[in-house]
Every structure is written in C-alpha cells, then in structure tokens.
Image (cartoon, rainbow, N blue to C red; front, top):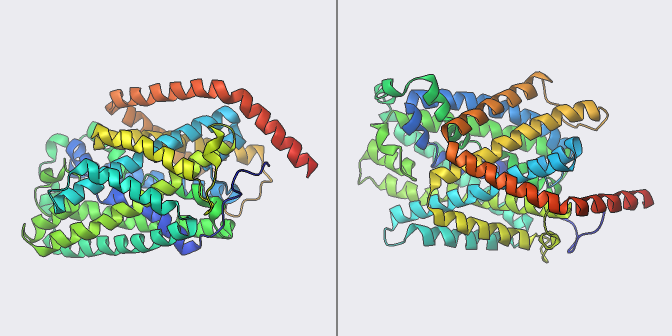
Amino acid sequence: MKQQPGGALRREINTMQLWAIAVGLVISGEYFGWNYGWAVSGTIGFLLSTLLVTLMYVSFIFSYTELTAAIPQAGGAFSYAKRALGPLGGFLAGFATLVDFLLAPPAIAYALGSYTNFLYPAIPVVPAAMLSYAVFIGVNLLGIKEAAQFSLVVTLLSVGEILLFMGLIAPSFEWQNFIAHNPELLHTGHVFAGIPYAIWFFVAIEGVAMVAEEVKTPQKTIVKGYLCSIGTLVLLVLGIMILSGGIGDWRLLTDIDHPLPETLAMALGNNNIWAKIFTSLGLFGLIASFHGNTISYSRQIYAMAREGFLPSFLTRLNKHQTPHWALISGGLIGFVAILSGKTDQIIILSVLGAVVMYVFSMVSLLVLRAKEPNLPRPFQVPMYPYLPWTALILTMVCTVAIVYYNPLISLIFTCIMLLSLLWFAVVKNKISVFENEQALTTEEQ
C-alpha cells in the first residue's frame, strides 16, 4: 500500500480509553435530543420506541464488533462494505457514515451553546457553538494519545454526573406523572414516530471503528471496549428517560435543548443550586460527544481519501500524525449546519445516515461470512445468523419509520446521496487505478 503523506496513524489507545471514546461519542444523546421523542410519542410510546431501538443496538453492536475486530481499519463501515460489496457499496456506506458523523457535531455544538446560554444568558447560542468547533478541532490537532486521554477524563465526569442526576431526582419520581397525558399519543404510529429520537440515545457508538488503526492490540481491545460501552449506555438510557418522565409535567421538556437541568429544577425547585451546578457540569457530557465525533468524522474522511474516494490532500497528517485537513474540512461543514439553527432536523439527518450505514454493515457481515469464511475473526457474533438478521430487520423497520414520518428531511437526504453518486461517477476511474497500484505493490512485497 502506498505510504501516505505524513506516515501512518499511531497505535496509542488502550481498553479504558476506547470505552471512554465509545461512551463519550454517544453520551450527549442522554443530555438532549431524545426529549423531542416525547412530543411525538408521549412517555409510554417513547419508552416502547426506546426498548425497540435498544434491542436493535445490542444486536447491532455484537455483530459490528465482529467486523471491527476482523478488519480494524479507520474506514469502519466503508472498509467492510468495500471489501464485501465492492467500490460502490463501500462508497455508499462511507457516504452514509459521513452524514452520520458530520451532522452529529453541529447538533451537539448547538446544545453546547444552549446550555451555555442557559447559564450565562448574555452569551448567544450560535457564537458559543462556533467556538466549540474551533476549540475541539484544536484539541484533536494535538494527536490521538492526548485526544484519547481527554476523552477518558470528560467521559468519566459525564457518567458520574448522570448517575448523580438520577440519584437526585429518583426520590421525586411518581409513576402517575410518567403515564399522564399519554392516551392521545399512545398508538403504533406514534411509537414509530419516536424512533429517530430513541436512536439519538445510542447513535455514533459505531464511531469506535474509525479509531481501530490507533488501538493497541485491536483484536482484544475493540471487543472489550465495545461490549462494555453498550452495557454502560443501556443502563444510563433507561435510567434517564424513565426517571425524568415521572418528575412532573413532562410536556414542559419536549422542545428544549437542556432538559436535564430543567428536570432538576422541577424536582428540587427553580432556585436550587443543583440545577445550576448540573448545567455547568453537564457541559462535560456534550464536550465528550463533540470531541469523540470530531475524532470519528476526521478518520472517516481520511480513510475515504486514502482510498481515492475524496481529494488526496485530506490524507495529509501533521507532525502529531493527525489528519488535520480532514478535521478542518469537516468543521467547515459543521459551521454551515449550525447556522441552520434546526437541531431536531439535524438530528434526524444524522440518524438517517446512521441507519443506512447499519444496513450496509449487517449486509457486509452476512456477505463476508459466505465470501471469506477463513477470514480471521477474533470475535464472532453469538447466535449467528440470528443476531445479525435481528439487527438488519430492526434497522430496516426503523429506516422506514423515519422516512415515513419525516418525508421532507428524507428527501433532502436522498438528494444529497444522489449528488454524491455523481461524485462517485467522476472519481471511479481514479479509484480503479489506485486499486491496481495497490495490487501491484502487494505483489512486489
């Protein structure tokens, strides 16, 4: 394989840091965004949406771990689909992954601005969100070792904070509050309408695959990191969503980007010091996810550029072996998304990218089992093929539900995908030349 400008990515990440990156990628979904699901599903309907999505993610992560441990490459689903389905399949999976990880950070950055504005009303939301990008792109430019250690610190603080939050509101929980105001929202259609917001609880955990080339002993570390992280998230998700719904009138929390401090205020009183303290500390959870998603989108851009699908300058690494142009270019796209000011719509676009990528990943797993039965697999998904098929079917159900209840945003996603296919038509000849050069280099070695 050709040596890229600046050399190869460094293997620096241990199991604890990988767990922190995985949980950190997702944990902002516990701080905001999911509460929009209450608006369309009610608390009971959204609980059912969440249980369905939780089953999907548990089966998906067990299956995805097999792929990541067997093919520990920075491209993640892009690399798996390209190997299983060819260049076009790889490109479509890579495109969906880019939508997922390029649009999650703007939503998180906007929430960071909202939390900051809640604490300090004089600071506008959009400038605070923009500043977040500049700061965390800067942190990531320092190198993966420093970035991973930063993730570990902020993720531990975030998990501790959520546990504290649940402990503070639990005494105020009343089941009657949780089930109130639900009858008009409790039917199958509303359960499906809540699916994209339930996915927001977990979306981006798959981003761990993008740092696979920077993990020490990836075959062992990836398995431990993934399975521990999904267990952590299931406990946090169910605890936050159920307890928050039983504190008071949950309808007051359905259209804001800072539901947790408002829940604390409902439980403890508007002037309680814990609400302010929690909001200050709550920035750590958003920071952890923003930071993790920044790592992931930059590695995805780097991996696709390395294979010839994106301009070659995006493969360049700085002196810290970090793909700096990939970081910066993704940040510019994030700035444009922030200016739209539509957090819920950005979330749905990001989720659409995720579920399309999940479909390609599960198909790739099934194809590779048949196509490459002797591929070394340090971890094999249990109950094969039932678990991958469960993940695939549930993902397709979720995709249909998202498209049905969000036709305009789905149309925008489709148009972007069609434009990306025009780009693929332009670069496909270059990709063929690049692959031939790779094959010749391998034969010479």
